[in-house]
Amino acid sequence: MSKNAEEDRNQIVVEEDIIFEVKARSAVLQISVKGSSYIADDMALKKAREVSTLVDALKEMGISQTDIRLKNVVADAQTGLVTKTSSAKYFMSVKIIDLDKLSEALSVVTSSKNCELHKLSWQFDEERALRLDYIAKAFAAARESAECVARTLGVNIEGIYDASYIDFVVPDDYIPNMPSNIRRSAASLPADSLERARGAAPAPALPTGQWQRKCIRAHVVFAVGKCL
Image 1 (cartoon, rainbow, N blue to C red):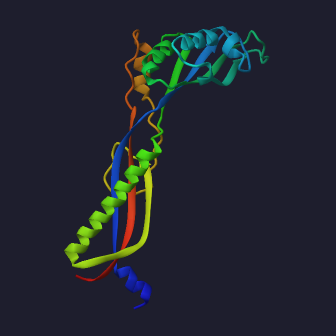
Image 2: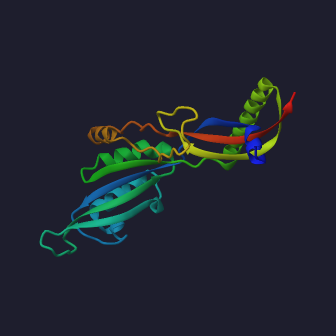
Image 3: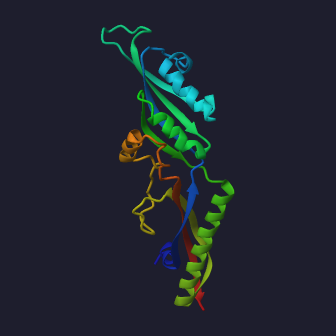
């Protein structure tokens, strides 16, 4: 038997998952506005009447001008010629940093007959110190599990052959220690919730999804020594 084969037999391999939750720091609304005139650049935020009306309403509630961005303009030119009098659809993004203002912002957007809300995306950014703490907990749990196995088998843990970790967003159907190639984007507002929000006269209820479940998975290969 080769030396490497012998080493492979003298190992305890452990994977431990630590689940934690992160609250969204901000939200981004993806919207479109139907305008009666065509303005191609960022001047539309001030010069296109329907767009500027929305921008002014958002600014009045405390949203900064820098967090309101024009992403694209699509002209409706039935004659084939695009002029300032051509109607257009303006695609915009609105970043809501103060989530206490989100419900009001949704109300402003969905109550306008010229506006359409396409998507709400949560933005998550956990603090580095918090993330490092959970990484440490995952490796501590792996060590604890390996020591339990070693005691049961009557052997010593002498060192570590390999150690690594991954982190991923936990899906709703999460099962502990499922395959580690899981990736899922930040939650967005479901389509049926959007429809309910558009039809509601009062301010829409705050959408769910502000909390994101994340997992730190530690993978450690321990070297096993002589029997106790």
